[in-house]
Length: 387
Image (cartoon, rainbow, N blue to C red):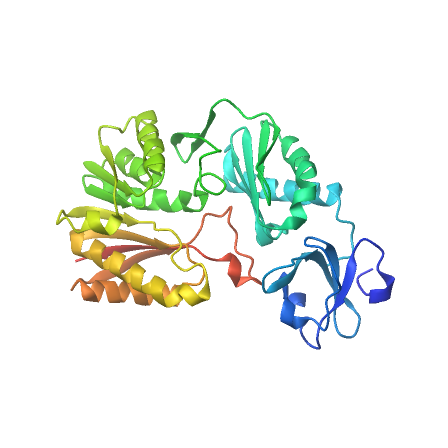
């Protein structure tokens, strides 16, 4: 079927659109975004409509869905002219779950679907024990919400699916009274209605473990601590004291509950404050963790974002004891690895400190990077020794 002419489309529900000459090359190498300016023409289509993409020579390239707004016109679902139906979604979700079972044997907490990397562009799903939380900004998935939920609910132990799409959140199945689960040795509880995005930031799960050994016997500062997971790991690893700082009082309430749930409430203290202001108080720490939000959500914001990252990291360098460790992160896709390294060097130089890179890390393996799509790599986590 893959060599069919664009007049021979087997699924009449899929519209057809032709690319300009040579614009198919990136897509044939595995990229899943067809940009609006790459098409000769685009048919009139509703947001989320199925659309087949053809090269200028009328050969089939891929089947995906149309987006009415933004630079990306079509997100590709398949390189075959196959039906997009319940069987299609079930196969993708089963394959994704089987991979997570390899990554985290016996765990019921993981990113189940990581968008393009799992062949479901624009869709993210996390599992937290009996609950699966789903998030998408793509209109295509909303009519499929019930179907997707049914596929998730077939997995052993899943009782409810919370779907956040282009309307009000929808619950399928039942929502457990208390969503309780274990993540890398921590006993946690989640309020899915109040949490950001899909719940927790699972991408840092292995990085928190990598940082924990440097906390033993040290005073630790956890900046942008959110639900306190870095703090709890540091306390479990033998930190003498942990200060967690965030600007969300609701997140800090959850962090305090997590510390108590894991028996480290006597070591961890949480404060609602600006992270740079808290670092400027003149106290020193043996381990500082910086896990800020994405400062650059668009390419236009890159310059200002790097200025903010530099100021934040300089404040951390100023507050580190000699021989201390800095764990610094960026989840901004538009801040690439080169930008990130240069920012750290500028911050260290501005503080008059020497630093050695011990590890450069990325997201956990349930956030796999699709090699043909560098856009799927976004998280940078550097662990540095500082004199």
